[in-house]
Image (tube, one colour):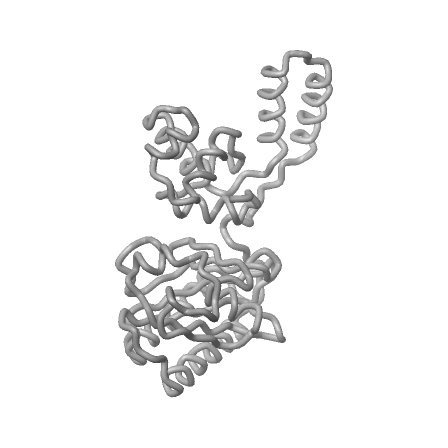
Length: 276
């Protein structure tokens, strides 16, 4: 959700869950999911699911203009495809998680208030059938009622979990400044690199519930290869490492980013600004 929202996190989750149940129980869709718009309206994060068979969609970050939801975000109107993977009207960065869920026909409806998109609701079928006008109208009605429910809630500040930043205070800045003065006097490149990594970890505010959101150079390189869909053995071959070492790096990445699988780690890293 955007930095200032019209509902608390729990109120938002309850409203979205109610909408997802209507998609599945009333409209008859096989799966429904949705999430808030974050990063100043530039992306959305799938935070709630109903009817999912895997965790492939959980915490998926969808950038504006990409995929179906990203298209709905930019256009600020409902969009649908009858066969997601083969659809020519959208980009295909998210084919893997969609395919893992076995879904084909998908609609995406934005939650719009004051001309601003606050979230996206999805509903999908596991068959290649057309999304009819009646289904789309009912989905739009659910979205409007959901947005109205959120708009009527007391206004408080609410951010996505990875946007919450603790106050580091002046003490943290002073430490970074002192460390910078030390780094300037270090001639050994290896030691200098280690100190610079420590300074970066001190300066960067960590994600809530995570040890650190800063990846080392090796961790980033391993994750970059994983983002291409490579397995541990292939990554190890490309980087000249043992498969066990690659596994250890990925385990460290997932711990730092508070994720349970490499796909989620890739998406969270992208949301944090890593170029993957």
